[in-house]
Length: 268
Ligand SMILES: NC(=O)C1=CN([C@@H]2O[C@H](COP(=O)(O)OP(=O)(O)OC[C@H]3O[C@@H](n4cnc5c(N)ncnc54)[C@H](OP(=O)(O)O)[C@@H]3O)[C@@H](O)[C@H]2O)C=CC1
Ligand SMILES: O=C(O)[C@@H]1CCC=N1
Image (tube, rainbow, N blue to C red; front, top):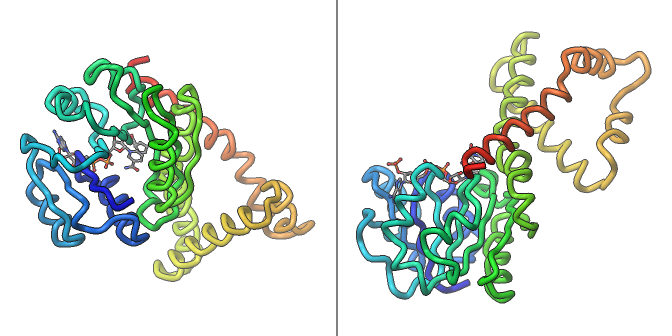
């Protein structure tokens, strides 16, 4: 990309992006500027990535054409109220859950190009799943530029805005569900006598390898699962317990609950 980028908010998501952008060489430290109130976070990011940081209130660098808003939805209104005059000539990219494009227009007007993104935490290891939508002011060139940015840290999908809450429930919140599943696998292993280190390694590699298999094969998960499930074997015994406990339904309801919360955060 080569042009400078401002991150407003230097928390978990900003850190994931900065790491990904630097690792993929899509940006260099001198092109990244982070606005963050917490001095410990600022110093953490400076030490780790050699980027420039500042407290909120300092003017944003004039050369930065792209501003990535990475603060919590609950504080976004205040951030936009403070920055609105500095956002008019830039491309605004927001990663906040829930907030619709109209929310940004209510602060900065409807002439500012805004791209709404739902990334996920796997961006940290260049394996994120980002989903984008745009307002009418975003040109095809700006969208392509944003896609390139997010492609550098994983996959990018462009959707209509009406689907953003749905993807927030699935790919945005999904890592939390999967990590809980990994914990469950680990605890199961520990319960039957494995040490923690072995249980962790096996749980993670099993989830990783299975996801890779599902991706590479292109087969429906049910077809792959049938291959692991020998008649009268071990897997079918475990699967029966999962079905009896309503595991699949619980996962579905978890996605739905996250979607509901995304809608609430967006005010609907
Ligand atoms: N974490 C995730 O997996 C995902 C998060 N998101 C979205 O990304 C956004 C950021 O989330 P996440 O990184 O997890 O949150 P964090 O709380 O880790 O990061 C937000 C940062 O913004 C800082 N901040 C608060 N007020 C201001 C301000 N006025 N100006 C600049 N920075 C400010 C906070 O500082 P302080 O803590 O001192 O208040 C904090 O360091 C959210 O909107 C979330 O919905 C989207 C997808 C996945
Ligand atoms: O929990 C959250 O609100 C953020 C958005 C998606 C994942 N984490």
